[in-house]
Picture 1 (cartoon, rainbow, N blue to C red):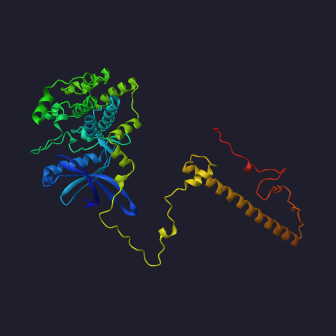
Picture 2 (cartoon, one colour):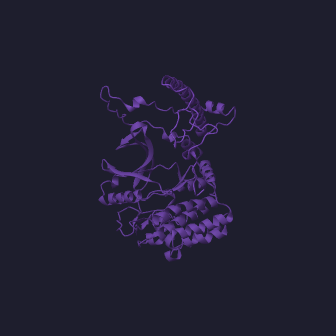
Length: 451
């Protein structure tokens, strides 16, 4: 299926379908060739007529629009098209942690423990921002409530972003329960959440601890054959230390993971910041803090074809599903600014840059090449200006001599001055004082007392 017009966006392809919504890759078009790739999240038709679901979806838009953090996918827009509510969100060029876990399991690979901890650290930074978000000096008390592998994205450039605040809401607002709708994934819920108790930010700490445990061990922690078994495991199963499941995990890391997974929330880390600091300490003390390039290579090695397609920008190629908007023609005879300005070329002549480098094999930065040319033009302007000034001064001098001779003054003789007045300072044609003549006080350089 080709591109499809959807409101002010064009849907290019479906990315995924979840329990409540489907996500498309889309593009926002604008004048002058403007185009932005976005992720369009539309709720499924079976929920379109539900006022309760619509309110929850509006909650997501309202909350997410207030969040602006490097580890949270940005929400750009919310609207309803033909009765279908949607969100326009940042399109993250990468893969979700669920896909990473499944691919590693299929290939018999493991996620290096420093990389797994790094992903958790980045998510923790985003969640700490969410938990402490305030407006008008009042806390919003936002809890994500759905921290799970499919909601954590790792981009091809090594960024980590948390997506989908569809379950998030201020805890003071009453939650609405829909028949057959699971708010969050049971396998990643906190015990208090799955039990229907009030939740706070420590629920997200438990969920992130579950995701980290699975990244470290490449095993499911609480997931069972059905929802009942999953809930039973979540409430009763003893959680083994990660290093006991995967010997490559350092033993000193396990206590922090288990603290995040404490069933009694009062025994967990008090804040997401405390969890972040504990994980950071292990990475720094071990000297194994991963770099962005290493994370990027890991994702690229797992999904080489998809990452190469993203790197080449093939996902940006599209054809518009609607005609281009024709600009209104100006009145006859009216001048247009576009007619007066020649658009700059998008091509850079690298050969000129290399020649200016006197045969260097490496090209100069474009800014340096522009700087060299600008200095040359400036020098030529100075020389030309100086020549013009000298010519005008010579003509003026000859005209003055002719004028003085006509009215009786001897050529080259200065007029007499009256007693008590200063003789005018002799100067060259360029305005500088001649040798042996006095320089006025106004010509002396000023100094800054503070120098």
